[in-house]
Length: 596
Image (cartoon, rainbow, N blue to C red; front, side):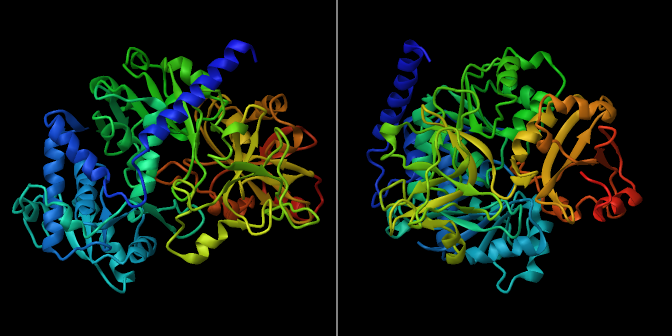
Protein backbone atom coordinates (compact mmCIF):
# COMPACT_ATOMS: atom_id res chain seq x y z
CA UNK A 1 0.00 0.00 0.00
CA UNK A 2 1.42 3.39 -1.00
CA UNK A 3 1.97 6.31 1.33
CA UNK A 4 -0.93 8.37 -0.04
CA UNK A 5 -3.35 5.45 0.30
CA UNK A 6 -2.13 4.77 3.85
CA UNK A 7 -2.61 8.41 4.86
CA UNK A 8 -6.10 8.41 3.35
CA UNK A 9 -6.99 5.17 5.16
CA UNK A 10 -5.92 6.49 8.55
CA UNK A 11 -7.49 9.91 8.03
CA UNK A 12 -10.88 8.39 7.18
CA UNK A 13 -10.72 6.03 10.14
CA UNK A 14 -9.54 8.49 12.78
CA UNK A 15 -11.82 11.33 11.67
CA UNK A 16 -14.84 8.99 11.64
CA UNK A 17 -14.09 7.65 15.13
CA UNK A 18 -13.50 11.12 16.57
CA UNK A 19 -16.69 12.42 14.97
CA UNK A 20 -18.67 9.56 16.46
CA UNK A 21 -17.16 10.03 19.93
CA UNK A 22 -18.04 13.73 19.81
CA UNK A 23 -21.64 12.95 18.87
CA UNK A 24 -21.82 10.45 21.75
CA UNK A 25 -20.42 12.81 24.39
CA UNK A 26 -23.83 13.32 26.06
CA UNK A 27 -25.05 9.72 25.72
CA UNK A 28 -24.62 8.39 29.26
CA UNK A 29 -26.33 5.53 31.13
CA UNK A 30 -28.12 7.90 33.52
CA UNK A 31 -29.19 10.38 30.82
CA UNK A 32 -32.90 10.78 30.09
CA UNK A 33 -32.79 12.06 26.48
CA UNK A 34 -34.05 9.23 24.26
CA UNK A 35 -34.73 9.06 20.54
CA UNK A 36 -38.29 10.21 21.35
CA UNK A 37 -36.86 13.50 22.64
CA UNK A 38 -34.69 13.86 19.55
CA UNK A 39 -37.70 13.45 17.27
CA UNK A 40 -39.71 15.91 19.38
CA UNK A 41 -36.90 18.46 19.15
CA UNK A 42 -36.79 18.03 15.40
CA UNK A 43 -40.56 18.55 15.25
CA UNK A 44 -40.11 21.89 17.01
CA UNK A 45 -37.19 22.87 14.78
CA UNK A 46 -38.56 21.83 11.37
CA UNK A 47 -42.20 20.82 11.90
CA UNK A 48 -43.05 20.62 8.19
CA UNK A 49 -39.97 18.66 7.09
CA UNK A 50 -40.75 15.09 5.97
CA UNK A 51 -39.92 12.49 8.62
CA UNK A 52 -41.39 9.32 7.04
CA UNK A 53 -42.21 8.82 3.37
CA UNK A 54 -44.39 5.84 2.51
CA UNK A 55 -46.66 4.50 -0.18
CA UNK A 56 -49.60 6.69 0.86
CA UNK A 57 -47.69 9.96 1.18
CA UNK A 58 -45.54 11.47 3.91
CA UNK A 59 -45.62 12.30 7.59
CA UNK A 60 -43.88 15.47 8.69
CA UNK A 61 -41.91 15.58 11.92
CA UNK A 62 -44.81 17.46 13.52
CA UNK A 63 -47.30 14.79 12.45
CA UNK A 64 -45.02 11.97 13.63
CA UNK A 65 -44.46 13.55 17.04
CA UNK A 66 -48.16 14.29 17.48
CA UNK A 67 -49.03 10.68 16.66
CA UNK A 68 -46.40 9.46 19.13
CA UNK A 69 -47.91 11.73 21.79
CA UNK A 70 -51.34 10.22 21.14
CA UNK A 71 -49.86 6.75 21.60
CA UNK A 72 -48.28 7.88 24.89
CA UNK A 73 -51.58 9.25 26.24
CA UNK A 74 -53.35 6.08 25.11
CA UNK A 75 -50.78 3.97 26.95
CA UNK A 76 -51.33 5.99 30.11
CA UNK A 77 -55.11 5.45 29.87
CA UNK A 78 -54.48 1.69 29.60
CA UNK A 79 -52.35 1.69 32.73
CA UNK A 80 -49.04 1.15 30.90
CA UNK A 81 -46.19 2.35 33.09
CA UNK A 82 -42.40 2.52 33.29
CA UNK A 83 -41.03 -1.00 33.03
CA UNK A 84 -44.06 -2.49 31.30
CA UNK A 85 -43.79 -4.03 27.84
CA UNK A 86 -46.15 -3.72 24.88
CA UNK A 87 -46.02 -6.18 21.95
CA UNK A 88 -45.90 -4.71 18.44
CA UNK A 89 -46.83 -6.95 15.50
CA UNK A 90 -47.17 -4.91 12.33
CA UNK A 91 -45.80 -4.70 8.80
CA UNK A 92 -43.73 -1.64 7.87
CA UNK A 93 -45.67 1.61 7.98
CA UNK A 94 -45.44 4.95 9.84
CA UNK A 95 -47.55 3.79 12.77
CA UNK A 96 -44.95 1.13 13.55
CA UNK A 97 -42.44 3.85 14.45
CA UNK A 98 -45.00 6.19 16.01
CA UNK A 99 -46.14 3.37 18.30
CA UNK A 100 -42.72 2.69 19.81
CA UNK A 101 -41.93 6.39 20.08
CA UNK A 102 -45.15 6.77 22.03
CA UNK A 103 -44.37 3.85 24.29
CA UNK A 104 -40.97 5.40 25.06
CA UNK A 105 -42.75 8.63 26.05
CA UNK A 106 -44.82 6.51 28.43
CA UNK A 107 -41.71 4.83 29.87
CA UNK A 108 -42.58 1.42 28.41
CA UNK A 109 -40.49 -0.99 26.37
CA UNK A 110 -41.64 -2.63 23.13
CA UNK A 111 -41.38 -6.21 21.90
CA UNK A 112 -40.72 -6.01 18.15
CA UNK A 113 -42.38 -9.20 16.97
CA UNK A 114 -41.21 -10.85 13.75
CA UNK A 115 -44.09 -10.78 11.27
CA UNK A 116 -43.02 -14.10 9.75
CA UNK A 117 -43.77 -16.06 12.91
CA UNK A 118 -46.99 -17.98 13.51
CA UNK A 119 -48.48 -20.33 16.05
CA UNK A 120 -46.20 -21.64 18.77
CA UNK A 121 -43.12 -19.68 17.69
CA UNK A 122 -45.14 -16.46 17.73
CA UNK A 123 -46.63 -17.31 21.11
CA UNK A 124 -43.14 -17.99 22.46
CA UNK A 125 -41.94 -14.56 21.33
CA UNK A 126 -44.94 -12.79 22.85
CA UNK A 127 -44.74 -14.67 26.14
CA UNK A 128 -41.09 -13.75 26.68
CA UNK A 129 -42.00 -10.06 27.01
CA UNK A 130 -45.08 -10.67 29.20
CA UNK A 131 -47.09 -7.80 27.65
CA UNK A 132 -50.59 -6.91 28.78
CA UNK A 133 -51.32 -5.19 25.46
CA UNK A 134 -50.51 -6.05 21.85
CA UNK A 135 -50.59 -3.46 19.07
CA UNK A 136 -51.31 -5.44 15.90
CA UNK A 137 -51.65 -4.30 12.30
CA UNK A 138 -55.00 -5.39 10.89
CA UNK A 139 -53.12 -7.39 8.23
CA UNK A 140 -51.58 -9.48 11.04
CA UNK A 141 -54.83 -10.22 12.88
CA UNK A 142 -55.10 -13.84 11.77
CA UNK A 143 -51.41 -14.38 12.48
CA UNK A 144 -51.82 -13.06 16.03
CA UNK A 145 -54.84 -15.29 16.59
CA UNK A 146 -52.78 -18.33 15.56
CA UNK A 147 -50.69 -17.80 18.69
CA UNK A 148 -53.59 -17.46 21.13
CA UNK A 149 -54.07 -21.22 21.78
CA UNK A 150 -50.43 -21.46 22.90
CA UNK A 151 -50.50 -18.48 25.28
CA UNK A 152 -51.18 -18.86 28.99
CA UNK A 153 -51.79 -15.13 29.28
CA UNK A 154 -53.20 -13.43 26.17
CA UNK A 155 -52.45 -9.70 25.89
CA UNK A 156 -55.34 -7.42 25.01
CA UNK A 157 -55.50 -7.01 21.25
CA UNK A 158 -55.51 -3.51 19.71
CA UNK A 159 -55.91 -3.39 15.93
CA UNK A 160 -54.33 -0.58 13.94
CA UNK A 161 -55.53 0.05 10.40
CA UNK A 162 -58.84 -1.81 10.72
CA UNK A 163 -61.36 -0.86 8.03
CA UNK A 164 -64.33 -0.95 10.43
CA UNK A 165 -64.74 0.20 14.00
CA UNK A 166 -64.83 -2.66 16.47
CA UNK A 167 -63.68 -3.56 19.93
CA UNK A 168 -59.97 -2.94 20.15
CA UNK A 169 -59.98 -0.41 17.31
CA UNK A 170 -56.76 1.43 18.07
CA UNK A 171 -57.23 4.22 15.53
CA UNK A 172 -60.52 5.27 17.16
CA UNK A 173 -58.90 5.17 20.58
CA UNK A 174 -55.97 7.29 19.38
CA UNK A 175 -58.29 9.83 17.75
CA UNK A 176 -59.76 10.55 21.18
CA UNK A 177 -56.33 11.21 22.69
CA UNK A 178 -54.62 14.62 22.94
CA UNK A 179 -51.64 15.18 20.65
CA UNK A 180 -49.78 17.37 23.15
CA UNK A 181 -46.49 16.32 24.72
CA UNK A 182 -47.33 14.27 27.84
CA UNK A 183 -44.18 15.51 29.57
CA UNK A 184 -41.28 13.61 31.17
CA UNK A 185 -43.21 12.80 34.34
CA UNK A 186 -45.17 10.14 32.45
CA UNK A 187 -41.98 8.11 31.90
CA UNK A 188 -41.50 7.38 35.57
CA UNK A 189 -37.79 8.15 35.66
CA UNK A 190 -36.78 6.27 32.52
CA UNK A 191 -33.04 6.51 31.75
CA UNK A 192 -30.90 5.36 28.84
CA UNK A 193 -29.72 2.14 30.47
CA UNK A 194 -33.36 0.96 30.64
CA UNK A 195 -34.69 -1.46 28.08
CA UNK A 196 -36.15 0.04 24.92
CA UNK A 197 -36.83 -3.09 22.86
CA UNK A 198 -37.03 -6.82 22.93
CA UNK A 199 -35.45 -7.69 19.56
CA UNK A 200 -35.54 -11.31 18.50
CA UNK A 201 -33.01 -13.55 16.80
CA UNK A 202 -34.07 -14.87 13.42
CA UNK A 203 -34.89 -18.33 14.69
CA UNK A 204 -32.99 -20.14 11.92
CA UNK A 205 -32.13 -23.04 14.25
CA UNK A 206 -34.97 -23.08 16.77
CA UNK A 207 -37.32 -20.82 18.68
CA UNK A 208 -36.34 -17.13 18.61
CA UNK A 209 -34.38 -15.69 21.53
CA UNK A 210 -35.16 -12.19 22.80
CA UNK A 211 -32.22 -9.82 23.12
CA UNK A 212 -32.39 -6.95 25.57
CA UNK A 213 -31.87 -3.67 23.73
CA UNK A 214 -31.49 -0.52 25.83
CA UNK A 215 -32.04 3.12 24.90
CA UNK A 216 -28.29 3.51 25.40
CA UNK A 217 -27.53 0.82 22.85
CA UNK A 218 -30.02 2.30 20.42
CA UNK A 219 -28.36 5.72 20.46
CA UNK A 220 -24.88 4.19 20.25
CA UNK A 221 -25.90 2.21 17.19
CA UNK A 222 -27.68 5.08 15.50
CA UNK A 223 -24.84 7.51 16.18
CA UNK A 224 -22.24 5.12 14.81
CA UNK A 225 -23.83 5.30 11.38
CA UNK A 226 -24.32 9.05 11.57
CA UNK A 227 -20.62 9.43 12.37
CA UNK A 228 -19.70 7.25 9.40
CA UNK A 229 -22.05 8.57 6.70
CA UNK A 230 -22.61 12.15 7.90
CA UNK A 231 -26.25 12.47 6.79
CA UNK A 232 -27.88 15.90 6.60
CA UNK A 233 -31.44 17.18 6.73
CA UNK A 234 -31.49 16.95 2.92
CA UNK A 235 -30.87 13.18 2.87
CA UNK A 236 -33.56 10.61 2.21
CA UNK A 237 -32.81 7.10 3.45
CA UNK A 238 -34.60 4.27 1.66
CA UNK A 239 -35.34 1.39 4.02
CA UNK A 240 -36.94 -1.71 2.47
CA UNK A 241 -35.91 -3.92 5.42
CA UNK A 242 -38.27 -5.05 8.21
CA UNK A 243 -38.63 -2.53 11.01
CA UNK A 244 -38.81 -5.29 13.63
CA UNK A 245 -35.08 -5.95 13.27
CA UNK A 246 -32.18 -3.72 14.28
CA UNK A 247 -30.73 -3.19 10.79
CA UNK A 248 -33.89 -1.76 9.28
CA UNK A 249 -35.57 -0.62 12.48
CA UNK A 250 -32.67 1.11 14.24
CA UNK A 251 -29.72 1.79 11.92
CA UNK A 252 -31.69 3.26 9.01
CA UNK A 253 -34.10 5.08 11.32
CA UNK A 254 -31.23 6.73 13.15
CA UNK A 255 -29.63 7.97 9.93
CA UNK A 256 -32.80 9.90 9.21
CA UNK A 257 -34.00 11.08 12.61
CA UNK A 258 -30.65 12.09 14.12
CA UNK A 259 -29.97 14.34 11.13
CA UNK A 260 -33.48 15.65 10.49
CA UNK A 261 -33.63 13.78 7.18
CA UNK A 262 -36.43 11.61 5.82
CA UNK A 263 -36.92 7.88 6.17
CA UNK A 264 -38.48 6.15 3.14
CA UNK A 265 -40.13 2.91 4.22
CA UNK A 266 -41.40 0.04 2.10
CA UNK A 267 -44.06 -2.39 3.30
CA UNK A 268 -41.99 -5.29 1.96
CA UNK A 269 -38.83 -5.49 -0.12
CA UNK A 270 -39.41 -5.92 -3.85
CA UNK A 271 -36.55 -6.41 -6.28
CA UNK A 272 -38.78 -5.27 -9.15
CA UNK A 273 -39.84 -2.03 -7.44
CA UNK A 274 -36.56 -1.17 -5.70
CA UNK A 275 -34.99 1.23 -8.18
CA UNK A 276 -38.33 2.74 -9.15
CA UNK A 277 -38.87 3.57 -5.45
CA UNK A 278 -35.37 5.04 -5.21
CA UNK A 279 -35.89 7.31 -8.22
CA UNK A 280 -39.46 8.37 -7.41
CA UNK A 281 -38.67 9.26 -3.80
CA UNK A 282 -35.29 10.87 -4.60
CA UNK A 283 -33.46 8.62 -2.15
CA UNK A 284 -29.85 9.57 -1.40
CA UNK A 285 -28.93 6.52 0.73
CA UNK A 286 -30.27 3.05 1.37
CA UNK A 287 -29.83 0.31 3.95
CA UNK A 288 -29.01 -3.18 2.70
CA UNK A 289 -28.31 -6.74 3.70
CA UNK A 290 -26.15 -8.91 1.49
CA UNK A 291 -28.91 -11.02 -0.03
CA UNK A 292 -30.78 -7.88 -1.07
CA UNK A 293 -27.73 -6.79 -3.07
CA UNK A 294 -27.47 -10.18 -4.73
CA UNK A 295 -31.16 -10.10 -5.68
CA UNK A 296 -30.67 -6.68 -7.29
CA UNK A 297 -27.57 -7.81 -9.15
CA UNK A 298 -29.34 -10.91 -10.48
CA UNK A 299 -32.21 -8.81 -11.85
CA UNK A 300 -32.11 -7.91 -15.57
CA UNK A 301 -30.33 -4.63 -16.40
CA UNK A 302 -32.61 -1.60 -16.45
CA UNK A 303 -32.42 2.07 -17.32
CA UNK A 304 -33.18 2.72 -13.65
CA UNK A 305 -29.86 1.16 -12.59
CA UNK A 306 -28.25 4.56 -13.05
CA UNK A 307 -29.36 8.18 -12.91
CA UNK A 308 -30.48 7.97 -9.29
CA UNK A 309 -29.38 10.24 -6.43
CA UNK A 310 -27.83 7.54 -4.21
CA UNK A 311 -24.53 8.83 -2.79
CA UNK A 312 -23.88 6.17 -0.14
CA UNK A 313 -25.26 2.90 1.18
CA UNK A 314 -24.67 0.97 4.37
CA UNK A 315 -25.42 -2.53 5.57
CA UNK A 316 -23.88 -5.91 6.17
CA UNK A 317 -23.28 -9.10 4.23
CA UNK A 318 -22.22 -7.72 0.84
CA UNK A 319 -19.99 -10.52 -0.41
CA UNK A 320 -16.58 -9.65 -1.82
CA UNK A 321 -17.39 -11.78 -4.87
CA UNK A 322 -20.11 -9.38 -6.03
CA UNK A 323 -19.05 -6.11 -4.34
CA UNK A 324 -17.11 -4.53 -7.28
CA UNK A 325 -19.71 -5.58 -9.85
CA UNK A 326 -22.57 -4.31 -7.69
CA UNK A 327 -20.85 -0.97 -7.09
CA UNK A 328 -19.96 -0.51 -10.75
CA UNK A 329 -23.31 -1.53 -12.23
CA UNK A 330 -25.37 0.74 -9.99
CA UNK A 331 -22.89 3.61 -9.83
CA UNK A 332 -22.71 3.80 -6.03
CA UNK A 333 -19.90 6.05 -4.88
CA UNK A 334 -19.59 4.85 -1.31
CA UNK A 335 -20.35 1.59 0.48
CA UNK A 336 -20.03 1.41 4.26
CA UNK A 337 -20.17 -2.24 5.28
CA UNK A 338 -20.52 -2.92 9.00
CA UNK A 339 -20.39 -5.83 11.39
CA UNK A 340 -22.56 -6.23 14.44
CA UNK A 341 -25.56 -8.02 15.83
CA UNK A 342 -28.49 -6.96 17.94
CA UNK A 343 -27.19 -8.72 21.04
CA UNK A 344 -23.46 -8.40 20.31
CA UNK A 345 -20.99 -6.02 21.94
CA UNK A 346 -18.72 -6.39 18.89
CA UNK A 347 -19.30 -3.67 16.33
CA UNK A 348 -17.10 -2.20 13.62
CA UNK A 349 -17.45 -0.32 10.34
CA UNK A 350 -15.51 -0.38 7.11
CA UNK A 351 -15.35 3.39 6.78
CA UNK A 352 -13.17 3.55 3.65
CA UNK A 353 -14.92 0.93 1.52
CA UNK A 354 -12.15 -1.69 1.35
CA UNK A 355 -13.75 -4.44 -0.72
CA UNK A 356 -14.86 -7.44 1.31
CA UNK A 357 -14.00 -6.09 4.77
CA UNK A 358 -16.77 -6.01 7.37
CA UNK A 359 -14.95 -3.46 9.50
CA UNK A 360 -11.62 -2.32 10.82
CA UNK A 361 -9.98 -2.22 14.24
CA UNK A 362 -6.34 -1.14 13.91
CA UNK A 363 -3.94 -1.89 16.75
CA UNK A 364 -4.09 1.62 18.15
CA UNK A 365 -7.86 1.43 18.69
CA UNK A 366 -8.05 -2.04 20.25
CA UNK A 367 -8.58 -0.60 23.72
CA UNK A 368 -11.56 1.40 22.48
CA UNK A 369 -12.89 -1.48 20.35
CA UNK A 370 -11.59 -4.74 21.85
CA UNK A 371 -12.22 -7.22 19.04
CA UNK A 372 -9.94 -10.23 18.44
CA UNK A 373 -9.83 -13.45 16.42
CA UNK A 374 -8.94 -16.62 18.34
CA UNK A 375 -8.05 -20.12 17.19
CA UNK A 376 -11.07 -22.34 16.78
CA UNK A 377 -11.71 -26.06 16.30
CA UNK A 378 -14.40 -26.51 13.67
CA UNK A 379 -15.11 -30.13 14.65
CA UNK A 380 -15.67 -29.50 18.36
CA UNK A 381 -17.01 -25.99 17.69
CA UNK A 382 -14.96 -24.67 20.59
CA UNK A 383 -11.97 -22.32 20.90
CA UNK A 384 -8.53 -23.91 21.07
CA UNK A 385 -6.75 -23.44 24.42
CA UNK A 386 -3.08 -23.65 25.37
CA UNK A 387 -1.44 -25.59 28.20
CA UNK A 388 -2.51 -22.90 30.68
CA UNK A 389 -6.12 -23.14 29.58
CA UNK A 390 -6.14 -19.77 27.82
CA UNK A 391 -7.25 -18.99 24.29
CA UNK A 392 -4.79 -18.34 21.48
CA UNK A 393 -5.05 -15.30 19.23
CA UNK A 394 -4.85 -16.08 15.52
CA UNK A 395 -2.02 -14.86 13.38
CA UNK A 396 -2.63 -12.54 10.44
CA UNK A 397 -5.08 -13.91 7.86
CA UNK A 398 -5.71 -17.04 9.93
CA UNK A 399 -9.36 -18.01 10.40
CA UNK A 400 -10.81 -18.17 13.89
CA UNK A 401 -13.77 -17.02 15.95
CA UNK A 402 -14.24 -13.28 16.42
CA UNK A 403 -14.77 -12.24 20.03
CA UNK A 404 -15.31 -8.94 21.84
CA UNK A 405 -14.12 -7.87 25.27
CA UNK A 406 -16.82 -7.26 27.87
CA UNK A 407 -16.72 -4.46 30.41
CA UNK A 408 -19.06 -2.08 32.19
CA UNK A 409 -17.96 0.75 29.93
CA UNK A 410 -20.75 2.19 27.79
CA UNK A 411 -20.83 0.43 24.44
CA UNK A 412 -18.90 -2.59 25.69
CA UNK A 413 -21.62 -4.04 27.91
CA UNK A 414 -23.30 -7.27 26.94
CA UNK A 415 -26.99 -6.70 27.59
CA UNK A 416 -27.73 -10.33 26.89
CA UNK A 417 -30.95 -12.22 26.34
CA UNK A 418 -34.00 -12.45 28.55
CA UNK A 419 -32.99 -16.05 29.26
CA UNK A 420 -29.89 -16.16 31.47
CA UNK A 421 -28.80 -19.55 30.08
CA UNK A 422 -28.84 -18.17 26.53
CA UNK A 423 -26.69 -15.24 27.66
CA UNK A 424 -24.20 -17.51 29.38
CA UNK A 425 -23.64 -19.48 26.16
CA UNK A 426 -22.35 -16.33 24.49
CA UNK A 427 -19.85 -15.57 27.25
CA UNK A 428 -16.31 -16.95 26.95
CA UNK A 429 -14.30 -16.93 30.18
CA UNK A 430 -10.57 -17.11 30.92
CA UNK A 431 -9.66 -15.97 27.43
CA UNK A 432 -6.33 -14.12 27.63
CA UNK A 433 -6.08 -14.09 31.42
CA UNK A 434 -7.88 -15.81 34.25
CA UNK A 435 -11.16 -14.14 35.07
CA UNK A 436 -11.67 -12.10 31.91
CA UNK A 437 -14.91 -12.44 29.95
CA UNK A 438 -15.39 -12.03 26.20
CA UNK A 439 -18.42 -12.23 23.93
CA UNK A 440 -18.59 -15.07 21.41
CA UNK A 441 -19.88 -13.79 18.08
CA UNK A 442 -20.36 -17.25 16.60
CA UNK A 443 -18.68 -16.00 13.42
CA UNK A 444 -15.45 -17.15 11.83
CA UNK A 445 -13.30 -14.30 10.57
CA UNK A 446 -9.77 -13.41 9.59
CA UNK A 447 -7.87 -10.18 10.16
CA UNK A 448 -5.17 -8.60 8.01
CA UNK A 449 -2.14 -6.49 8.86
CA UNK A 450 -4.08 -3.22 8.66
CA UNK A 451 -6.75 -4.37 11.09
CA UNK A 452 -9.47 -5.12 8.53
CA UNK A 453 -11.79 -7.99 9.50
CA UNK A 454 -13.18 -10.34 6.84
CA UNK A 455 -16.18 -12.57 7.45
CA UNK A 456 -15.62 -16.23 6.57
CA UNK A 457 -18.64 -18.16 7.84
CA UNK A 458 -21.04 -18.78 10.66
CA UNK A 459 -19.96 -21.38 13.19
CA UNK A 460 -22.04 -24.45 12.47
CA UNK A 461 -22.12 -23.66 8.76
CA UNK A 462 -18.42 -24.31 8.21
CA UNK A 463 -17.67 -28.03 8.12
CA UNK A 464 -14.69 -30.33 7.56
CA UNK A 465 -14.26 -32.60 4.53
CA UNK A 466 -11.14 -34.42 3.40
CA UNK A 467 -9.35 -32.95 6.43
CA UNK A 468 -10.05 -29.37 5.30
CA UNK A 469 -12.41 -26.65 6.54
CA UNK A 470 -15.08 -25.68 4.04
CA UNK A 471 -16.65 -22.22 4.42
CA UNK A 472 -20.20 -22.41 3.09
CA UNK A 473 -20.34 -18.67 2.46
CA UNK A 474 -17.38 -18.84 0.09
CA UNK A 475 -18.78 -21.83 -1.81
CA UNK A 476 -22.19 -20.13 -2.04
CA UNK A 477 -20.56 -17.02 -3.48
CA UNK A 478 -18.83 -19.03 -6.22
CA UNK A 479 -21.98 -20.97 -7.09
CA UNK A 480 -24.01 -17.78 -7.17
CA UNK A 481 -21.81 -16.40 -9.95
CA UNK A 482 -22.34 -19.41 -12.23
CA UNK A 483 -24.61 -19.00 -15.22
CA UNK A 484 -28.19 -19.98 -14.52
CA UNK A 485 -27.89 -20.21 -10.72
CA UNK A 486 -30.19 -17.71 -9.03
CA UNK A 487 -29.62 -18.77 -5.42
CA UNK A 488 -27.39 -21.24 -3.60
CA UNK A 489 -27.52 -22.55 -0.05
CA UNK A 490 -24.52 -24.67 0.94
CA UNK A 491 -24.27 -27.02 3.93
CA UNK A 492 -22.60 -30.24 5.05
CA UNK A 493 -24.32 -33.62 5.22
CA UNK A 494 -23.28 -36.78 7.03
CA UNK A 495 -22.16 -39.69 4.87
CA UNK A 496 -21.98 -42.97 6.82
CA UNK A 497 -18.39 -44.12 7.22
CA UNK A 498 -16.90 -40.89 5.90
CA UNK A 499 -14.73 -38.54 7.92
CA UNK A 500 -16.40 -35.14 8.26
CA UNK A 501 -19.36 -33.92 6.25
CA UNK A 502 -19.77 -33.85 2.49
CA UNK A 503 -20.73 -30.60 0.81
CA UNK A 504 -24.24 -30.24 -0.53
CA UNK A 505 -25.93 -27.30 -2.20
CA UNK A 506 -29.57 -26.47 -2.71
CA UNK A 507 -29.85 -24.47 -5.94
CA UNK A 508 -32.54 -22.33 -7.47
CA UNK A 509 -31.85 -22.22 -11.20
CA UNK A 510 -33.29 -20.77 -14.39
CA UNK A 511 -33.30 -21.79 -18.05
CA UNK A 512 -29.64 -20.82 -18.46
CA UNK A 513 -28.42 -23.48 -16.05
CA UNK A 514 -26.46 -26.42 -17.50
CA UNK A 515 -25.64 -29.06 -14.94
CA UNK A 516 -23.49 -30.96 -17.42
CA UNK A 517 -20.83 -28.23 -17.40
CA UNK A 518 -21.06 -27.14 -13.74
CA UNK A 519 -18.38 -29.48 -12.41
CA UNK A 520 -15.82 -28.23 -14.94
CA UNK A 521 -16.73 -24.61 -14.16
CA UNK A 522 -16.10 -25.17 -10.46
CA UNK A 523 -12.68 -26.80 -10.93
CA UNK A 524 -10.90 -23.51 -11.52
CA UNK A 525 -12.79 -21.69 -8.79
CA UNK A 526 -12.89 -24.09 -5.85
CA UNK A 527 -10.42 -26.60 -4.41
CA UNK A 528 -11.51 -30.21 -4.77
CA UNK A 529 -12.56 -30.59 -1.12
CA UNK A 530 -14.84 -27.52 -1.35
CA UNK A 531 -16.77 -28.58 -4.45
CA UNK A 532 -20.24 -29.81 -3.47
CA UNK A 533 -20.64 -33.56 -3.70
CA UNK A 534 -24.42 -33.36 -3.81
CA UNK A 535 -26.88 -30.92 -5.40
CA UNK A 536 -30.61 -30.54 -5.12
CA UNK A 537 -32.57 -28.33 -7.49
CA UNK A 538 -35.22 -26.53 -5.46
CA UNK A 539 -38.01 -24.15 -6.51
CA UNK A 540 -37.04 -21.80 -3.67
CA UNK A 541 -34.79 -21.45 -0.65
CA UNK A 542 -36.49 -20.66 2.62
CA UNK A 543 -35.22 -17.48 4.27
CA UNK A 544 -36.01 -15.41 7.34
CA UNK A 545 -37.50 -11.92 7.20
CA UNK A 546 -33.96 -10.55 7.02
CA UNK A 547 -33.02 -12.92 4.17
CA UNK A 548 -30.97 -15.37 6.27
CA UNK A 549 -31.17 -18.86 4.79
CA UNK A 550 -32.88 -21.59 6.79
CA UNK A 551 -30.64 -24.65 6.54
CA UNK A 552 -31.79 -26.85 9.42
CA UNK A 553 -34.39 -28.79 7.40
CA UNK A 554 -32.00 -29.12 4.44
CA UNK A 555 -29.31 -30.64 6.68
CA UNK A 556 -31.85 -32.96 8.29
CA UNK A 557 -33.14 -34.22 4.92
CA UNK A 558 -29.62 -35.04 3.78
CA UNK A 559 -29.04 -36.52 0.32
CA UNK A 560 -31.42 -39.49 0.21
CA UNK A 561 -33.41 -38.99 -3.04
CA UNK A 562 -36.24 -41.21 -1.81
CA UNK A 563 -37.07 -38.68 0.91
CA UNK A 564 -36.64 -35.49 -1.12
CA UNK A 565 -39.16 -34.19 -3.61
CA UNK A 566 -36.51 -32.14 -5.45
CA UNK A 567 -34.16 -33.71 -8.04
CA UNK A 568 -30.86 -34.72 -6.38
CA UNK A 569 -27.52 -35.07 -8.17
CA UNK A 570 -24.10 -36.31 -7.12
CA UNK A 571 -20.59 -35.65 -8.39
CA UNK A 572 -19.48 -38.96 -9.88
CA UNK A 573 -15.70 -39.22 -9.29
CA UNK A 574 -15.34 -41.56 -12.28
CA UNK A 575 -16.96 -39.27 -14.86
CA UNK A 576 -16.25 -35.93 -13.16
CA UNK A 577 -19.78 -34.64 -13.81
CA UNK A 578 -22.96 -34.27 -11.80
CA UNK A 579 -25.37 -37.14 -12.41
CA UNK A 580 -28.88 -37.88 -11.17
CA UNK A 581 -28.69 -39.67 -7.81
CA UNK A 582 -30.82 -42.81 -7.86
CA UNK A 583 -31.86 -44.85 -4.81
CA UNK A 584 -29.52 -47.59 -5.98
CA UNK A 585 -26.53 -45.26 -6.23
CA UNK A 586 -27.46 -43.73 -2.86
CA UNK A 587 -27.32 -47.23 -1.34
CA UNK A 588 -23.86 -47.76 -2.86
CA UNK A 589 -22.63 -44.52 -1.25
CA UNK A 590 -24.13 -45.33 2.15
CA UNK A 591 -22.67 -48.86 2.10
CA UNK A 592 -19.24 -47.55 1.15
CA UNK A 593 -19.21 -49.23 -2.26
CA UNK A 594 -18.46 -45.84 -3.85
CA UNK A 595 -15.55 -43.69 -2.75
CA UNK A 596 -16.42 -40.00 -2.78
